[in-house]
Amino acid sequence: MTRTVSGLLALFALVAGACIALGAYFTYGALVAAHRDALESRYVLAAQRVAGTAELAASFGITLPAQTTLTPLIEREAHLDASIVTLDVLDASRTVLFSTRADRVGQAATPVGEDVVRPIRNDLGREIGRAVVQYDDAAALQARASLARQIRTVAIPAALAASIGTLLMGWVLARRLQNRAVRAANPASWPVQAHDALDDIAATHARLAARLGVGDAAPAASGGAAIHGTHS
Image (cartoon, rainbow, N blue to C red; front, side, top):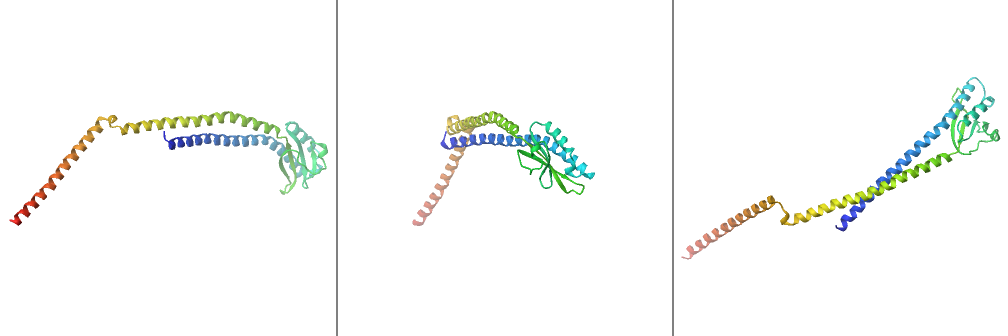
């Protein structure tokens, strides 16, 4: 095969492998996003329950610092999920009012991990505090690493198979085209109909050539006779 065909086959093989690789990459991104959303939904629910309880108490006129019943609530919510590092209730100035970690109470809120925040609002819609769930994302990172390994296990062989398959199919097609071109250039391999058509064309061409030859001779003869008559 020619160098051009070989280059095209290599290019098509690379494109096929790249398509598989890109598909695996986008699949990984979609699965990671879905896993993150599913993971954070648990923390969102915990923060929403705490914020909803605080807003209900505030609607009865109980200020946020006076809602001491929030302490057992946040402890119960934190015990439901071992990955929760701390669950805090902050006031409007971002000072910790209640927390599952006693050493954080009265301190300015500082991040200790990934967090999910839900505002606490009064009846007028003004933010009076926040419920903040901070969690350890080590489990999420481990899950993502495991997912990446599983996708690589499938994607790499698939990409190689696609590239090799493209090369083989392209090579087979190129060989078939080359063989057909060789047969087409050899008159011995032509079908009977092609030979008959060529014979008809040759016969027609011969008849036309003969007619053209007769037409050229007649004017020459008449011209010669006219000249001879003039001299006499």
